[in-house]
Structure formats: C-alpha cells, structure tokens
Length: 298
Ligand SMILES: [Zn+2]
Image 1 (tube, helix red, strand yellow):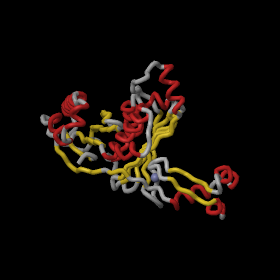
Image 2 (cartoon, rainbow, N blue to C red):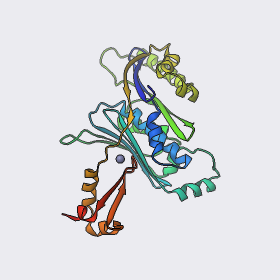
Image 3 (tube, helix red, strand yellow):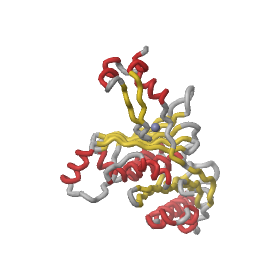
Image 4 (cartoon, rainbow, N blue to C red):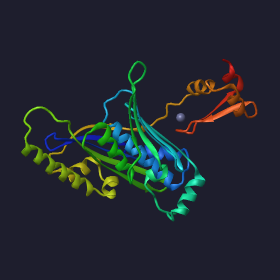
C-alpha cells in the first residue's frame, strides 16, 4: 500500500483532491542507475508530480509529463499508464551539475528542479492510442520550484484554481516522493451568489492553510488516509477511489528496432561497434543489441 494515490472531496464536494506517495516505484527507478543527489531529487519530484496529475486525468492510455530545458538537466520525463505503470528518465550533464554547484556555492544542498533546467518548458501529453486526438498542454518553466511551475500550468492552460505540494525524502540512497493537490470543482449550475462564493473562498483558503501545515514526516510515515483525516476532518473529507502504482517499462526489442531502422544509414554505420549496435533504454536500463544487417535491411 505504499505506492498509491487516493482521490478525495472536501467541503461537500466543493473541492476535489488527490494525494500520492511513491515508494517501491522509486526504489526500482534508483536501482537501475546512479545519479548525483540533485538529479535524483529532481527525478523523484518529477515522478511524484507526473503521477499526481495523471491521477487527476480521465484517460485510457499513457499520460506523460516532460520537461525540457537548456540547463545542466536537459530532459526530465515521467509517464504513467492508466493501468498504473510508472517510469521516469532524465538526461543531464554531470560536469555541468558539478560546475553549477561550485559557482552557486550550493554543494551539498538540494536546489529546486527548475533551477537545473533553466529556460525550458513543461509539457503534459495524453496519448490514448491510434485514432484518438493527442491532448497536449505546454507552459513555460517559470517558478521558484516545481510546485509553482505546475500551478502556472493549471492557471494558464486549465484555468482551474489548484493548490499543490510536493515532498521529497531521502531514504538511504533512494529518493522517495509524494504530493497532494486540491482543486476547485468547475462551477456547476444552481444557486450562485456572492455569499456562497465568499463562503467557498473562505473554505478554500482554510484548506490551503491546512495543506501548508502538512509536514514531510507525516507525509512519509502515516497512512495516506490518516493524513487526509488529520488535515481535513473539519472539512467533510470524503475518500473515493484508490489507485496503486508499480514501476513498469514499455520498451521492447521490436520498438527499438523500428526506431533505429528509421535512422539514416550513415548514422547507423556510426553506431556500429564490433559489428553490433547496442542501445540502452533510458527508462529501465535494458540493453539491446542488434546486428548491423537487422537495422539496414530496408
Ligand atoms: Zn525500458
């Protein structure tokens, strides 16, 4: 029960929320590669945010959160399937990370994820397979931390009042991550009045303050339902669905062969070593090896 998201409602359905915590998923991700601490923290935080937002979306397929930037970390990506399989990957320049830490005098500190990407974008994609429209949302990566960047997305693209917090916890060599989010429900018909709006705003502000009071210790040590009841017991918290997550990669030899075969023959030639071309999956570390002839057939 450690890799779970729970959906909930507050204040008689005025607001909806999600809480997510990842444990074994992160252990799996970090068992496949070693990263500098700042890269590991960014990867864990991205995985929590991706899973949190995926848990909010109705889809049948793959939700992807991707960030691209010009900094020492150039790509961070998490994808989550509707069946609850999660995987994440990062591209970074280790030398540039070290240099930046020396220049910024932040060695030994964890800096916010957007600082490592510098100028960039945050992209959400929902892919529901062939013959369906690809849903995509893009926002500039602006904010002092990843929470602020994500809130900008909700404000600009979705225009839904949203509030969220992300949490990181280093457990041995593994970075565990978690998150909580609340949203105002889109306005339903029926009675709407200045007084009602005022009451709703008061409740919304109270819920935000309660969320601010949630500590990392509570988030990582308590049962998630207990977290919700402790925080929101005076706000008619109602727990709905739970979803469990596990690490899962969708790479295959066939898919990779297709991708590589589509490359220019001279680029394939450049990759040949001892008559073989090897490629490693960025998500799970699986190494695939091909004979040159397998890729140059067409
Ligand atoms: Zn893979």
